[in-house]
Image 1 (spheres, rainbow, N blue to C red):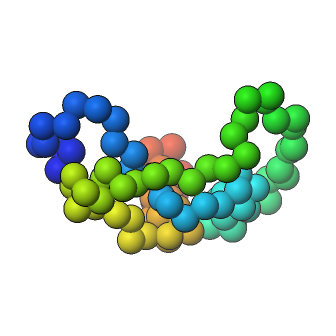
Image 2 (image 1 turned 135 degrees about the vertical axis):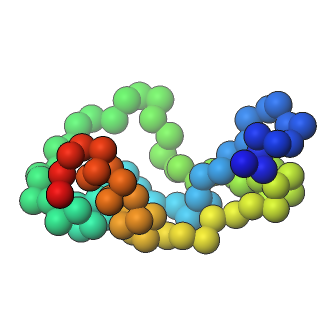
Length: 89
């Protein structure tokens, strides 16, 4: 909401500076959902970044914002919403 109410018209990264791999993310999703799905590994695209750690300095400075929820906690909090949207009890 702060960003939408600001005068900023350029992109502002509001990702998490806590770096994790796609595998770690997928494993967290499986753990939080209780899924028994198997992970499938594919060759990476040639231009795939090897590091994924967003710089949130602009969000901190402009909005006074930084994340306070971990990946697993965020997934756990989001799960009920997505279940309700999918019609899953």
